[in-house]
Structures are given as structure tokens and as C-alpha cells.
Length: 128
Image (cartoon, rainbow, N blue to C red; front, side, top):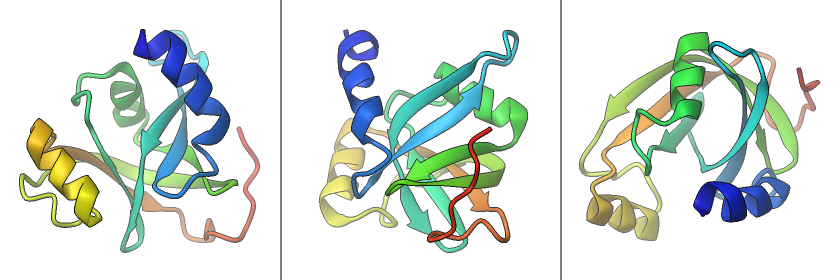
């Protein structure tokens, strides 16, 4: 239900709303292009995405296999590198209400990616 209904609607707005992003990734075997709406937060020189559905989600596995992805954040498409899984049960890096929700549902794993140099917010990047 979520994949069919809510995700299809969220794809239309996730790349523009604060605290959300649209991850652009390719299938590991098919090479097919996908867009997945996620929560994403700017942390240091990159972005952090809490994995509320776990690290075994297809989109996470696709990004990890490629080691990179593009994200649309507030209408701008950015290139992210060095995708890796990290764990933090405290979720102190997230805004207050998000941190509480992540702890409550036990989502302590997140995807951390580094922003490509030159791919700074405010500078549009071509989608691939």
C-alpha cells in the first residue's frame, strides 16, 4: 500500500519539502532508474537518511552497490558520494521530533553520504 499509493504521491513533493529528499538511483541488476522519497538531513559535508524501513530496502542496496546517488533537495539535484551505513541509537543528529520518532520505532541505522565537491546547494546539477 505504501509503495503504491503514498510513495507515488510523495515523489511529486519530496524533493521540495524541508526534511525530505528524492533519491535517484539505479537498479543493481536491471539498471532501471528509480526515484525514492525519503527523509534527509544535511549533516556536515553531506546528507544523512534515516532508514525507517531498514538497510535491506531495495533503494538502500542500490545506492550502497553504486556507492553514490543523486538527491533532489528543496528543488536542487545534488550528487552524493561514499554511501555507507552507520548506526546511532540516540539519533541526536536529527531534529527533536524526528529524533524521538526514530528512537521510538527503533530506526537506529542511517545512510550517510558525502556531498560531491562543487555540488553545493544553490547550484543546479543535471539529472542523470
